[in-house]
Image (cartoon, rainbow, N blue to C red):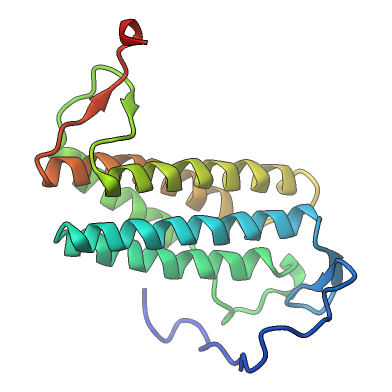
Length: 199
């Protein structure tokens, strides 16, 4: 992604609290006041939660000397802020230079999935989280990503979303699954598979 594609953030966070949200309302990027319980707020709040899980996974990857994976997760964290920017803005208010994800970002995820999947052994069962800490955190991120995707599907049934929002979240959850396996493979840890008779 080109660094000049979007405008740099133009904000100053000098005060953490403003008291403006005490009545349960907040403002979208376009200035509209909406309930903090609205579905749109729920979508980008969940994307924010996903970003936090990725931050934890990134630190675990660094602790395992998986620097390339840590760099990849850092790029995805930035992309998720771009996605949150889209979700915090009504489609008619989106500015061309406002941070957002594109179909090229989706294609980048697909290339990463294919690249990492090539070296992984074929699966003969479903995977249980537990190979190592990074594996577990990537699985946790995957489940939050799926929830974010479901919420965005609900939102898209009520109001329009950018064309790349759902494909990006859908592909990211697939990528997180593949990356969770890749960090196990890269550290020679054991992959835990579902064994129904071990319940």
